[in-house]
Image 1: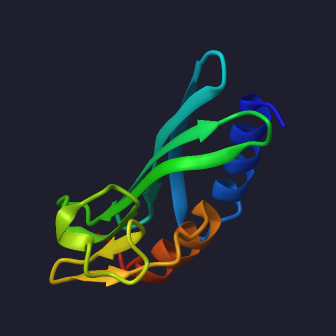
Image 2: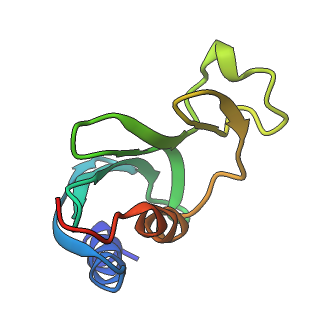
Image 3: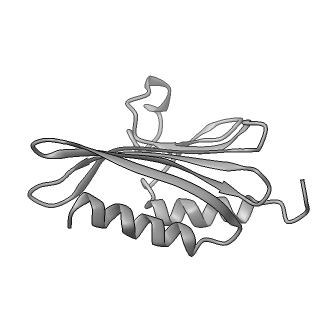
Length: 129
């Protein structure tokens, strides 16, 4: 799969996610074998999901590093999934994969972007801003 095809698939999944009002997604190939995908998704209540993935393209496309940061319209953290080698996350059984909340670090399975989009959609306030 090419990076362009991968990004098109992400865009389709974003469009299929409830409460999404806009999104911006881009990528940069890093020859010979890599690419970076970045973007953001804005939900109906103004909350945003920021996306960053570092991909290895061959022999098969592999997500090497990622960060999915979801915040309120005032930019307060709701959650963030990442696999940064954060020393504070070493106590997590799933290290380097972990989940940040405003209060703690938690173990994480390293969820797919699709799973993170669905989780973020469950936090969206249904009332107007």
